[in-house]
Length: 448
Ligand code: DOR
Image 1 (cartoon, protein in one colour):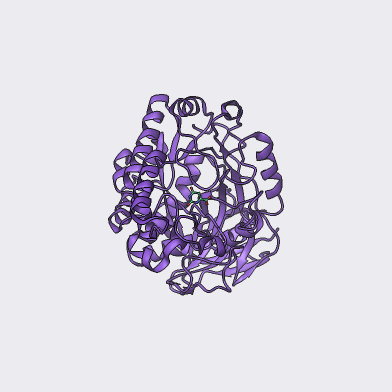
Image 2 (tube, helix red, strand yellow):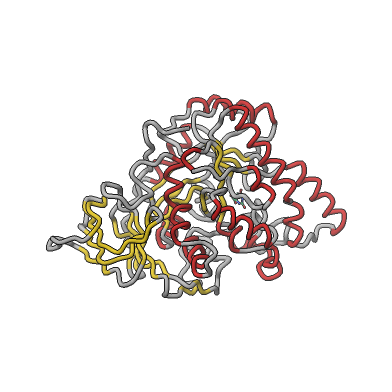
């Protein structure tokens, strides 16, 4: 493993910008500051006015393995992740078979070993009848329990309140929820069918998967968590109305946290005429006011995490009419770039981006030695040039599905290097073929 000297770089960490050097050895950050003895460096990277951030930890991705590998797999999508500056990910259970018992979980861990370019962990999925599996889950082995409290891709809906009570009462670790009320969605869809027939326009998606559907389900999740003292993390908040459910207390003190996703921060309903079903996702992208309120909630500490919900589908699947096109879009290669665009326009500061994509994720999930630029921590790092533009071209896409909602867009910044556990995975436009991802480890006294 190389000894790497990163020289004279602007380190963005824990709310500060500090100019200095980093020395990396045996995969970890050995020294931060002015480094005198550098004769032994195998690799020297000059800072040249660039920013060094902790690598992103994406707490919501769908990499489609096993069972849906025509859309993507652990290898292809984790490769896209490191090209985009994402060094760790937490992956969702709605593959085939679903990750809803220990053997499916072990199978995924075995698949990731030696093939994942980024560090990894997997959720155990909840079903209507796997409470015993949930109770027995080892909090040191999974990042959390995923509950689809609204139906989405895959057949994993859990919406009977008596079953949800059992899950919220007995989950031995963090519960992460997808919140959309399915009966409300079904009523809205019936009304749209009566009006438009089969040719419902995509612009109806945020009216079908409505604000009301999101609020009914999110408020139920929060009420259940309060009743049972559950450690709840509500995923992909998409409406201004839901924000009132969450507190702005320091993240380490919260029992209920919330996540926003990059597409809900970047797009709004005005983008449906241009991008159509390519941006169809659950929960739906809603109004500009919702997008702007979620950005404000990030600045205010009401939303704690920014993730992607990276969810690739093939071009052929997505090119179908509204009712047939599946929900979800590939994002993990461009999440950091899209956030750097917000920084460029002063909608978020770079320190806020680091806090929401790395520090807070490490705190919420109790990750060991990751998520910060600290001596002794793993060297999960990303070097970005805030002033070099990146145009998204078809050739540059690493996703198996081969498309992106950002195709043709030029971001104002560039991801130059990504280090995963001290391994230079992406550097100067080249991907190193060694897949160096490791399983994420959790603090033994992980607070749940
Ligand atoms: O849009 C979505 N796509 N939302 C989800 O909750 C699931 C995801 C997928 O797996 O395709």
